[in-house]
Length: 293
Image 1 (cartoon, one colour):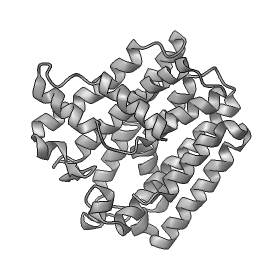
Image 2 (cartoon, helix red, strand yellow):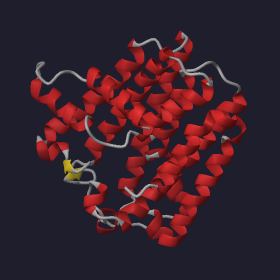
Image 3 (spheres, helix red, strand yellow):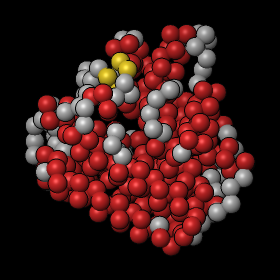
């Protein structure tokens, strides 16, 4: 994890505009939003999926995986900047420091999110990642994952559900879009950086990603209910305070924890056929479900 996190941090630092380039304040805010924080779960998943698909890792593949990792992490960072805005979740703390609109202002935060999203697609388009047709498919996959049929659509459902009691299937639908879509794209794009795979392998990786994406959100809901602000680096207990639909609210703490454990087991089963090549993906499933922050 430390090796991949360091590679990705360095690649992000190189990819982001320098803070002394005009418009300097916007570029400074973009770097503030992205660098020096976060677990980099999506880049870790992309690298692990590339390793599982390829078997053998060389420097050329690592460079392609770094590019894909930067793209998904820039998208993730943009989504956090916009989610924290007063018109969305209205939060003041992210990764242990003031949110972008608090450190700068709301207009700057909007522009930061817009700029990070466009930079992600620039990276996917300008670097050689795969055969042209396959690379075009990668661009499309990320676009679908973050649009109205993915992350943005999930956020719309979330905003419309405040104060409501959602059923477990309704919660799953929301989070397959809001959280799970980008996690699935991270795994898919990482795998596509390697050699072409059989449909069976692709299906197993996608099933793993779908399950671990749901598990990630269930654990997030548990941590929001159990952990402190200092531990999380963001405001703890905010979901309950804002009367948002969560797995803890829908099924209670004990059942939510059991659901996360079950999703982890099913995710591991989905990649069992890959054998030792899927070791990193299996370890990340453990990390996602067993994490304490």
